[in-house]
Image (cartoon, rainbow, N blue to C red; front, side, top):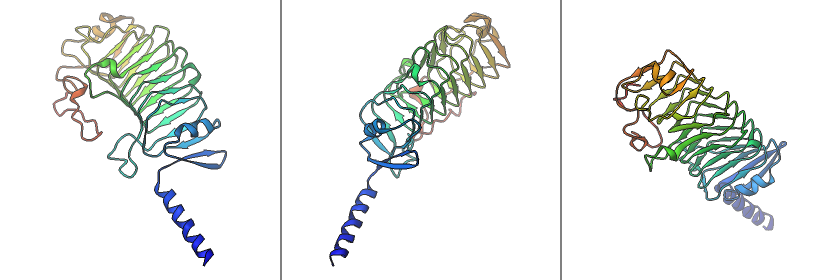
Length: 288
């Protein structure tokens, strides 16, 4: 009887634990588990190369990643994470370790990438504030991300700012604006939607992007020098190649740029997304 009673208690405990969301850290083939509110503890315990699987939960703190880990959330789209809810950081996120990977999070605060985070990747995340590359944050990739704050029409609330960082690559993402210092080199932007243009960009290559900005009126800022545009769509009624090559910069090259007259991709500003859940759709009336 005693054995059966103990077995019953053990089964109840296992059922109770399994019903809760847990964080799973994998380190050198060993498994470690934490309650969903113990993300900071999992980060503190991590060794370089660990993978941390993060369930749907709202984390109300600002983590700083100081160890090279792979941090994987369940995603930012509530329609695709109905079983657990989204993995949401209600605070800032700072990357301060090399070769860090962050995937599948909604982040409401600023994302800061420091020089120590060289070789890191951010993918399939949704950010609602700025992304800031500090000096010498080199060889960083951002891919399949959305950076936009629907609560405001100000482009400054989801700007990507790059300061003296080399070989940054941004792919398959949507963001409001891009600012880069003249000391940043090797910047690649491929297959993005850039809603509100850019400022101070030098030596970058733009390929297959949709750029929704007022080049003819100068509202997209300055490009500076030595940028290459390949196969982009620019939404500006009064713009020609000269807008890119001479009007807002010098020594820029425009190859196969399609300048389109028509309405904006998303409406008057980013608050006008025709959004269903978290599915960002281009307007039916968009020329892009």
